[in-house]
Amino acid sequence: MKASGAISGQVSADRQSLSASLVSADELASRDSGWDAAIDRHLARLAVERGLSRNSLDAYGRDLADFARFCIEQGIEPESLDAAAIITYLERLATRGLGPSSQRRYLASVRGLVHELVARGVLSRDPTVGIKLRPHPRPLPRTLSPRDIEMLLAAIDAGTARGARDRAMLELAYGSGLRVSELVGLGMHQLDLSARMLAAFGKGGKERIVPVGRAARRALKLYLGEPRAKLLKGRSSAAVFVGRGGRPMTRQGFFKTLKGWAASDPRLSWVSPHTLRHSFATHLLEGGADLRAVQEMLGHSDISTTQIYTHLSKSHLRKVHREFHPRAITDKSAGGGQ
Image 1: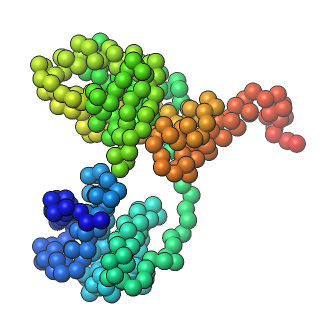
Image 2 (image 1 turned 180 degrees about the vertical axis):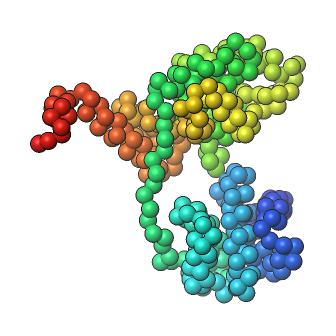
Image 3 (image 1 turned 135 degrees about the horizontal axis):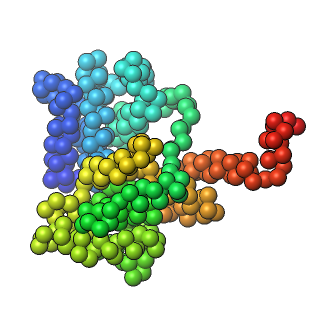
């Protein structure tokens, strides 16, 4: 499928602006004959066929601009790309100090571009086949306990317009497991408090229906009255959450807001917006929720992404067993011997 000229032009402009800090003007000009055109076509195709967000396209653009710079330095054109060149590039990433997860991200970006080159007949075969990075343990996400969540929410003064908004945002982020982009991008038309549901648009613009719990619904009803009107100052907005001058809240704005309230307790200084989503999933599974149901609410396309939370739940089960099972208590008092 070919992208329209407008989309292709916009993606091209976006990618060039992103890569300007990585390559010189001379390098960008020299790339027009090969890598520039190949990357532009690839990003345009991702925008149209996969419906990727601007943030995702920006990330792919940065990765591929870096790879193109390497290829230009080595005198490698798209049609001459081979496995040895890609392996050398990955080694360069390691010497630059990039960890395994970052190397995997770059390799994934390069694979996508290579698949495009093969599909267009620029390459006769895929040189990334057989290239694998050393497996590494995936770190478990840190989560808050239910008591920590309550303390964080209690720190917010909902008696002010800003506080009522912040309380509603935190309740919804934790109560419905929304991504921060889904939270700040929530429109009034997506919210149905009478049905206790909302429509979230996740990665690739995919829509899913998510329940809104009692606490989040109560906080939203409070905020959507006088507090939101005060923040709008006579203006109108389709966004649920608004900031100064009635403008929609941003990702950075919510991050600062969360950090500000978390600062009241030094133990919570590490908290980020995604922590609330991790805590949502973990607490559901600890409460006995079905893994498939949690996958649906989180909007994960692959259940393997959701399964990381089962490891957290197993840790919880071990802790409960140690604390409350009679034999575990007996073993512990005896020094853990058999």
